[in-house]
Image (cartoon, rainbow, N blue to C red; front, top):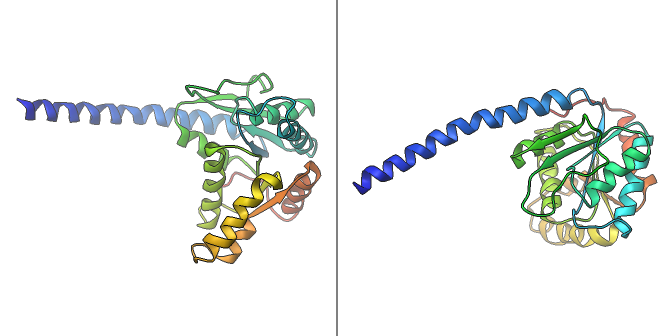
Length: 228
């Protein structure tokens, strides 16, 4: 009897997993349909916990505004903190402002600076991450937590392994990022776990002008298009 119940439980799990594929496919189709018509964009990442008026919130607004004035749209995770600041900067510049929202038990709610027709909702982190990578011409990463690092290292890994074309990855805030870069150089590189040229994939800056200069310089000789 117990064995029969055990097998029944596993069969239910397999059935649920199979039906989940349709929901996953639906998220991909909806994301691809909407994102493919938006045009060249730069993704801005950072903590959801940083408040308006704080140093990096205001810097994120300035960075996103400058990027939008240079002709790129802004994509964020759609929530508060640095995400809100990114969308706010795009909104102030009259640029495209995209939010890829995800429902979380704390901290996540969509911010008011996303264009009404460019707010997308996701249940799956991995589908949302594909949208960031596929439709971004650059990653601009401000101080954040585990989610921010997850997006950063996913992009580095995909470029390092030639799964996507190289694009600018810019870390904003040297006081926050220098310690991580030092560890990468002094520990990871010295152990032989990465190659010296892998360090060329990331750049650390402190101002919005540096961010725009890096992006513009990169795309002077490269085509703006989806990444895979």
